[in-house]
Length: 339
Image (cartoon, rainbow, N blue to C red; front, side, top):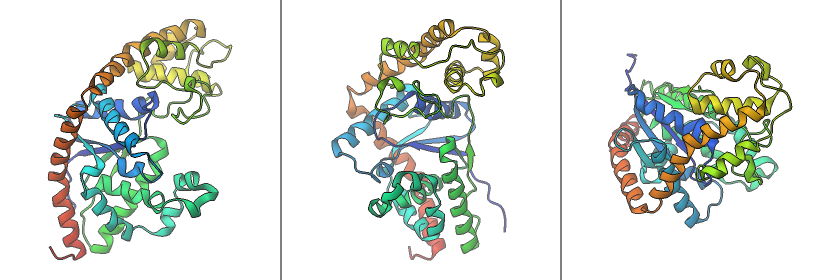
């Protein structure tokens, strides 16, 4: 079988479930911008609202959160002319391919997904079928565009492996080389940003303490205050990054500094090694304000004109469907559905 040469294409998405944080920005959106600006790929970025409703969402909140997430993408540097920016439910090919993949994926594969076990827990009988089938839809999100690369955090790596399994089984079952073996892109100094109050836990919008996170809607004063009050330990910063191995709170702040400054962790340590946190945290606060407050300001401006956001997403859906529709049509033909 001849090997297909796929167009280098990046796809990734974030759920519009509200409360965009520094973790979303450093772990995902900033990397999306970098891949867009590298010019090596066609880039498609998505508000995955179909995934969001696997658990109950208030309809008004979902609509507002979708627009706010789009505003966050644009304010952070996603250019709707350079990238395709879409709302998942506006491109029906995602859901249509997901049904095909529901019939390719095996129950055993889905039951082994760590996030299913974590989110359903002991209440699996009352969890939605959509939550169980979530990874097949994620595979469809990616493969409806024949995406070759997906920037993801460590917590999504298992889902990318399942995407590859689904693509491989489809190709094998139908004797084709139609879907690519998508590569995960896991890199960067802060692909997993931790809580400012507990460096052993991931930064989360669901944490009851607002001080545990930096929200992308926080103003400059709030950003600075949260950084200055972030949990640390009494020891000075070590000379090397390895010296932070058993210091999760300190390591988290160094990772954030490295990601915001586009420096390697080792270069950061060469610069700040030996400093007390009374010196380091104000510098980090100044850096965070410099990088993040323009984004929060632009998000606020964009949210004053949601009609413009809707126009951008509608145009993105048109561009996305121009890629997705032929791929779905060919998938149907391969499966044997009369067209």
